[in-house]
Length: 281
Ligand SMILES: Nc1ncnc2c1ncn2[C@@H]1O[C@H](COP(=O)(O)OP(=O)(O)OP(=O)(O)O)[C@@H](O)[C@H]1O
Image 1 (cartoon, rainbow, N blue to C red):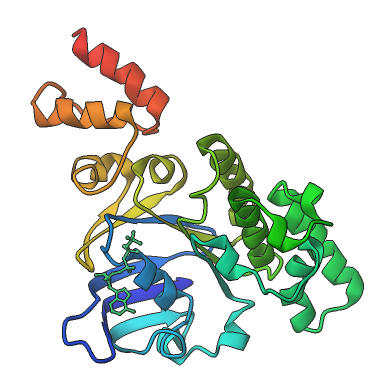
Image 2: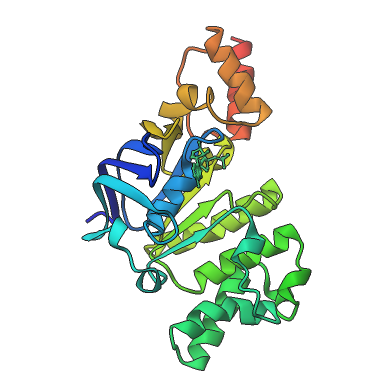
């Protein structure tokens, strides 16, 4: 059974006539990694908030069609009950900090403490989440003293400490280096093998192509494509950012110099290697 499903779904913000999102038709399986890609203003963050159950409490809107988590409508979500099922980490990590914790460890413990868990379980979750995010060394630091990248690691750790079924990362790696983001995503994949679904919202093709099984492409609030990185390569690169190797490969394909499929995995290294073969016949 799908963990989350959208069918003919649209969302219109209260007080506005044009839908912010429309034509959504996709489902998400437990353990799946999905990337939602699109340019600036394409609707990624709006979809992330909807998936997180923020409608109508934090996002007043009218929703049509089907949008469910399990059998429950996304629009009827009770934030407290959903906190254990879905966690959203947004691009600004400082907005995720509670402002009432004096250490990173207390910050990450905040969610589990509010679930009324036993102290040993809270300590276990905090240690595991900080370790996974390579933030253990920050445990005693005051949250307000963190750098942007450190705060992003802590925000993700705080979300993981809730042991969600679904983790939504909305440009949540923007302050990490590509190497650090790749390494963290590798460890998040281990949690997906245990059943956690992961959705990456981004404007950059590279991370998605490397880590997501499928990509959903948004343009102007509409779902324009859904498929694998190879299948969506040509259409996605007209809309989103990509590293120089992928960009050059895309130009070569547009110019008719590269006819064959861009073979998987679509990474900088494989595309650059294949690019050489294509150019030299
Ligand atoms: N509170 C709001 N009221 C009205 N319109 C909004 C509101 N928030 C976002 N929008 C509009 O909804 C559209 C989608 O915005 P959204 O933030 O979801 O896009 P995005 O793909 O996440 O963009 P970016 O990558 O630039 O963050 C944009 O046209 C935006 O101006």
